[in-house]
Structures are given as structure tokens and as C-alpha cells.
Image (cartoon, rainbow, N blue to C red; front, side, top):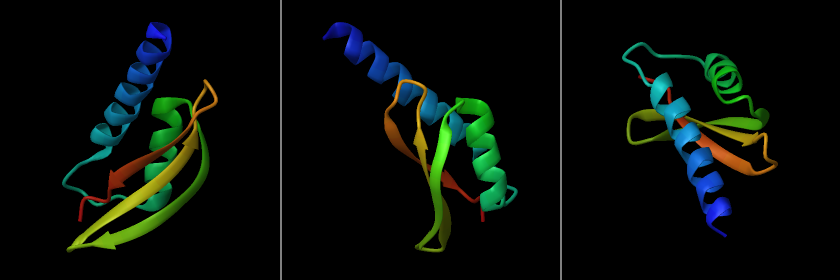
Length: 79
């Protein structure tokens, strides 16, 4: 049980680091966000979409992690 919690925490920390590392003042494209997520996390991208909310664009990228979990990473476009 403790090992599962540690693994989940490590995965969550990795995904947060990837998403926060992408955020910048310069707008990025969906393609750029996908490449960065793949490179930084080692996860396989399953799908990606663009969402618009309150004057902000966010890319929602669904990935399959190395340990077989499906996660969604939200990446701000920086606009």
C-alpha cells in the first residue's frame, strides 16, 4: 500500500513538473506542448485537445505513463 502511494506521488510530481515547466510568457502550439510532454515524461500521448476558458487557452494531453496509468496533463498555452 505504501509503495503504491509513493509511486502515485512520484507520478503526480512528474506530471506537475512537466506541466509547470512548459508554462511561459511565450505562447506555444499544441504540437510543441505534446513534444515537450513526451520528452520530459517519457509517457506516450494518447490524445490531445485545445480548451478555451476565460481568455486562456489550455491544452489537455492524455498520456499513458511508463507504469501503465492514464493521466491528463493540462498545459497552459501561454496566451
